[in-house]
Image (tube, rainbow, N blue to C red; front, side, top):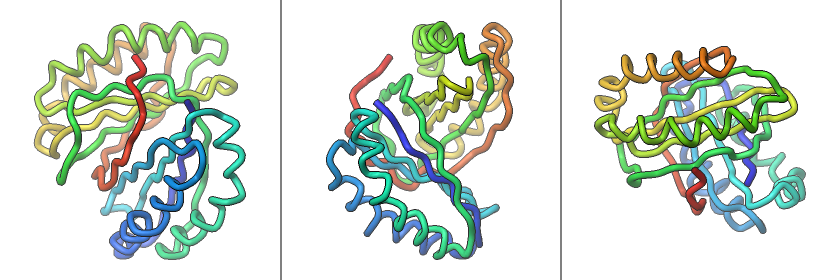
Length: 206
């Protein structure tokens, strides 16, 4: 499975308008396209950044819709008076223990590794990380995306609410630093978001 993520940076005061657009127009349009199996939206209201991700059953379906989604991206960016960038990923891990609801949050970790080592790292992530995250109170799910050609990876860990995410901060830091050190990854960025939309029809992938 594959994913296309669009990051929009713009006016924080326009975030509610962007959320409404994605919920009422972009998400139904995406889910109506052949091969789309999910849409999610993460928001940081403080700095005006949101990440809209669509998941696809295969790479062919994702690329076939490329032109169809360009206007949706532009409209989201225009609503926030901002700019956008898009990245394409392979979905390496998808694990959920409970559905997310109102107030859900996610911590997103970007990293850089060696392109030729991705299979080994994916296997290690699947067999060790989800089980350890399940020990954290309020944990809802984890997904990991990779770009095999560049060695880049991103993981999103969702929690039932911000209190649960805050309580997990110390253990989460230790877990990701230990994994990164063991597998030759550099953590390049960590950010926390509100998980405002999560309409997923993806199977477990662990």
